[in-house]
Length: 172
Length: 220
Image (tube, rainbow over all chains, first blue to last red; front, side):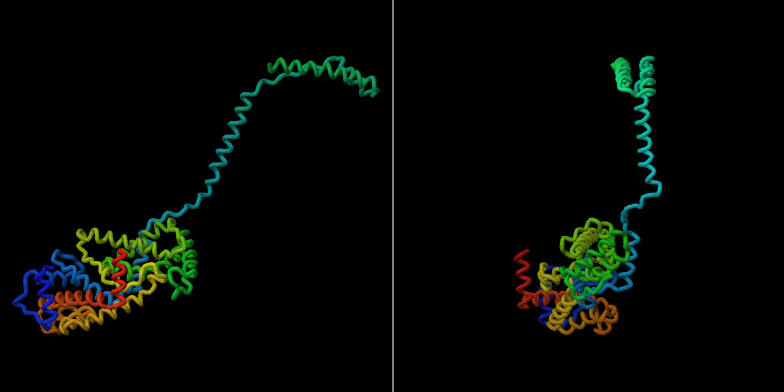
């Protein structure tokens, strides 16, 4: 608002009765008045819109209606909110989802067993027990005397030595 | 769902407990819980945050919708920290209003903020119970408007009454004042400017309001 405009308005409300001299209106004031009227009626802004008067009009409207939100409009707005919001919710796991870890674990176990089998050494035949051991076992079973038991221990010791020697040869 | 929150300020234990329950359910996808939150705070955000910053009902409704859409999408990020969710919502609303002003040259919407005109009538932001006294604020505004109207010359006062307090169409107002429509437009423009000058004077003169306004400006 220009100083000239300001001083004309100052004068008008202090000394005049609010009557408008239509012949004395400026183009600028007419344009502002028209832009204000359109903004208030249609809500569209134009370059000539006088911000000070428009702001004051908004204050007066606020004091009149209290900016109350109509209940029906409020419900309609909430419906829009739910319709337009992109909310990420945690998805429920599908029923077949447990199959994945179980299958993986099964496959891993199978692979481990195969690997162990493939890397295991060939089976080794044990040395055949000789006749002395078999004789000592038969004697000890038929006549369980102290002498028969000592003879069986000696024969078993000899056979144990043969087995250990064979194992040593196999894994050396 | 809401319980009885009437009269409970924004820091009351009862209100915060209610919010905690409602937010927990809303985050889990309960639309009724979110609707309860919306119905509790939407009218307040609309009247206290959006309309004073936009001065345009349709724009304020759009901003309200955007505010609650954004809040719903980010609800899982909200951390209460002992304060009401209202403050979080009002921050989102303020940002939406700012965004609308930023694009108004393109949208050609007639937006205006009269927040600064209300500011001296409001309590300091840190006061307990802030924002739930909308009715008190409105009463203060109406009292000030009436005081200022009394200072206007009768013709300006009548023009404002017809157009803004009685909501009459422009042509009706022009007929009532026995002027042409174009002349009425000029009359209402001058009346509004006269009102604004008196408003600024009245706020400055009122002892309690003036002191508060001065203190706020100093701290700002």
